[in-house]
Length: 460
Image (cartoon, rainbow, N blue to C red):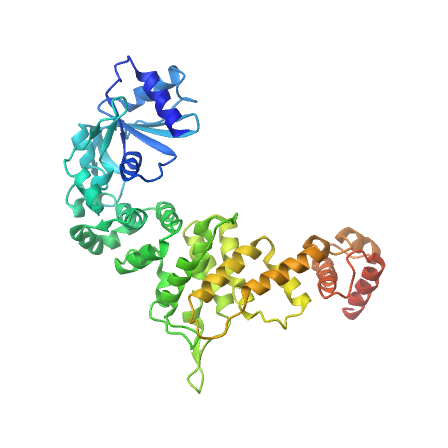
């Protein structure tokens, strides 16, 4: 797909004034040279008007649609096939102190354009037509081979202009297995507080990209050590140094990072980053609920409930969509349940877990498995594999869809002359509970009426 897009561009621009003047830049070139999987989008740069080039691509029928243009920045965006293509005029920029958006933008050379970019390994160019690799600054290839993250200019200037680049440094270090150059790392330490001028939406996007990486736990520790986490993740900080009980080897923070690292999201519909966020937050309520009894025993009563509220507030402050917040919060709230499983659980207790977890049942079990792996191995833990077998057996015998109330809300209202309201929902919930307990068959309508009648009588 990506190669088809590149071929359409090469063919469409061959024999025009643009031939040999357009360069691929950024992640595509870097990842291609590293032998890594290539991105789904590409960036193009030229010493010329990118907006005119984008319009030319549309008029030639190469682009799918009229370009989306940003004249102030000299950039444009089109889709070619299924590939997003961003085009930029080689430019130089200047910034205001309180904003990461450039105050002034003017056309420049490819060398000057490279100076404004975030890291030297992202300044490398590939000529669209000849395939020639161009290293404008003369250090990009060396840094790529050394697996080193350096900024094109003094790192203080690079990060001062756009503090989001500090978060990107952490992500690239983890994603590419690169080392952050000591002067760059020192500049992050000194400018971490400047991250406050970046919109929370931008921070959330970059943080999500980090959490989507298999080595996200290493990035989280780096965020803590650089104090970048202090700028947007304050609710997580009390976990650091919060000691636990005899089931644990690590404090709450270290245990949470281990859980993040152990998460297995393979085959799940839930994105990996969401499950890792749940792993990061599953014990976030422990510092606020930590108590020590008269024998020195450490307890965290109701930390799942308290943690769910902390998680909800923090995720909303980062502007995550409500659906994402609800899923993660539900996992935090339920994460203790499977951990208490024993073979003595009744079938109804297992059914209740299936019902309460709903579509998140398997992600919940994966979270708990990671949680257990991050604890001491010489103490007894719940057998989640056995619980999974119990679940499968019960679901095969009676699908959860059959646990619904045999009576609809409308039927209950008409039969008992009730007004729509909470009581009708309580009756339905009561009938569903009786099915889960095995006291009512899913298709026993007459039995359901009798039970509903008794339920109402007790509340009158």
